[in-house]
Length: 332
Image (cartoon, rainbow, N blue to C red; front, side, top):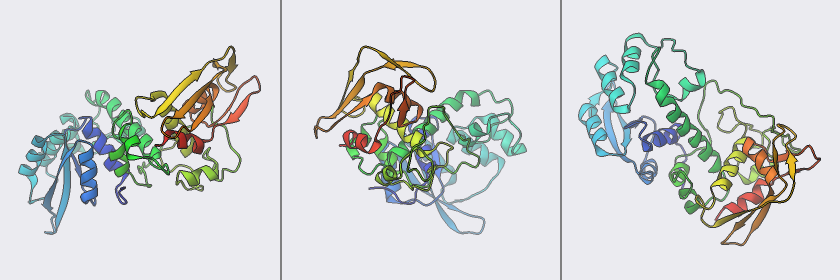
């Protein structure tokens, strides 16, 4: 089961709450039983809170947390009460949501003051950092980590066949709930910073130049004319390559039915892009349930780590990893 109308932001909020970066989170957009079930599968408790707008119209908010106390505190303060933007309300909400008090007070008093943060850092925060904040630098790495995890899981869940068991046993142990929370729209960054890497090698028959062949995109249910599905500045190909590399590195911890064996050989290849040397051998990846297997050059893994399915060495060796075949081995 997958949700159809939930946005990337809900997944991101859920991960932040699961990791207790935020003691409580609030979702103000549309939700239903599927969203509540997905949050529960992440170990989060949730509650629908009725509020009233200035016009008198009633709305429903979804608040969620790892424990009952923050939810009860929010309900006691706001259930069946009018939505307002007062200073005291901002302070209480900021405390419940885990935002630095200095930032909440600054925003409530002065609004959007210049804070010196990089735009990509401010965009992933759910509050506006105040100038010279002492707490935000400590919070940012945790926000970045959750944001990157949400992006990775989003692209992974585009796979045509990814079993519930496989997803729930990812190293982050959040995959199933993440897939339940995913949609194709992605995080709507207002000004994503385009990413590039010298290792990315263009492929033939790639209409949108996202480093994935059009035929592969059909398998992963991606649009062959849409280069960056989640609009985060990273093309789909590099994002998928890095995700698959990460999965291989974490087997069998993440996927117990997949076996990875390194077959080292005598000799080294030199990466044509960065000059790093890697063993001439390969890894043999086997699905212990289906007996399907695939061999991937260690040189190819080096390129996948940087986001490319195509690879080449200064010694004249080159090739392309087929992610569809790799996916068939990694999937249950």
